[in-house]
Length: 288
Image 1: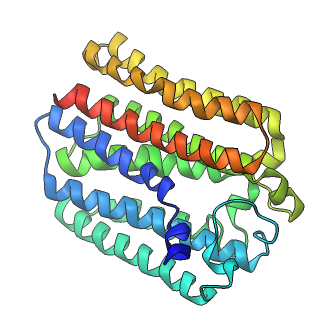
Image 2: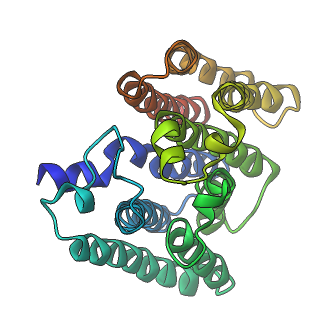
């Protein structure tokens, strides 16, 4: 059970929960929240996140990418769990997300079926298939689009039936922070990934530029509330989000002062916490 829990990668679940929380806060603020739809969006987001995590666990084992990896235990490579079970866990998670997404699409807008299919396909092909794009340095694009824009804007849409500028900007903010989590993950695994030929963005651009990218992502995320206030898309209370800066700065400091995997594991968890804090503060500013 401990190995399975590690394979879930609980710290990363914030990347799927936070955008749904932010999107629901926008829907409540706009007076159109539909709680059943919001719960459905949460099931879809978490299901896809779990599916990606399990699929990544299985695919990295098959390709030998976990041979010299330092970090949380992977289920397939641990020898404790049969790799076939990890593959079926990925399929089951994607299946739950698919069923929930189908129900949402039929209830709200059948055009969402196209978006849902794209989410599931992108989740599986991240590290699966004959040419996984996660091995081509494109993982950050996937995370920004699907765990940022799609998750946030999609939540607002299924609850209110509208796509707004506010939802798109908040989708960008959630995407920036979710991508920062992935960048920290790849920064931690840079040496081991390079050794087995896993070409993440971090291995392609090297450690220094990856650190700069991480800084830019976090800076952009915390710039969004300022933009919202200046553009009068939200009241000044949205600046409450800036109270989460110290949490993110702690993760950044670790990333800039060490290349050791163990401290970077802690930095990754701290960045995931920063995204959760960001979403909670945003929800408080909008709802309360």
